Image (tube, rainbow, N blue to C red; front, side, top):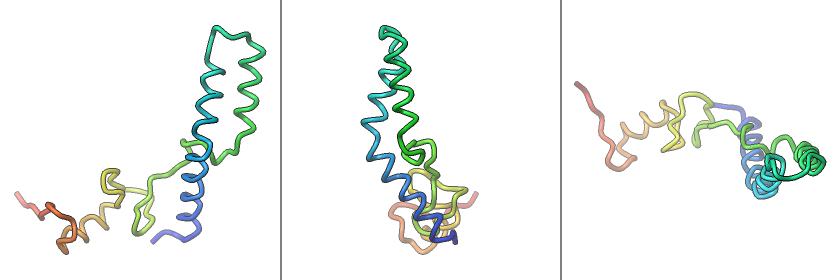
Length: 101
């Protein structure tokens, strides 16, 4: 079980990334547009650097929705491998059955 602070930190990052997404994309478009003068592109880079660090989507960590485990997370279910297996064994995930070969 992950610390509550780690889970809350990740939720805060997700919220900030959603909040600043449009602004960040607009500044990135200006900064990478070769048709614009270099001064304008440089000022866009500076404004991009002024945005909160945690608003970058790169800083978001995939965590299990139940336990907060940071590794072994299936993106489709947003569950760790351990939580997924536990729920599947209990029959709480529709269509998922235990298999053996």
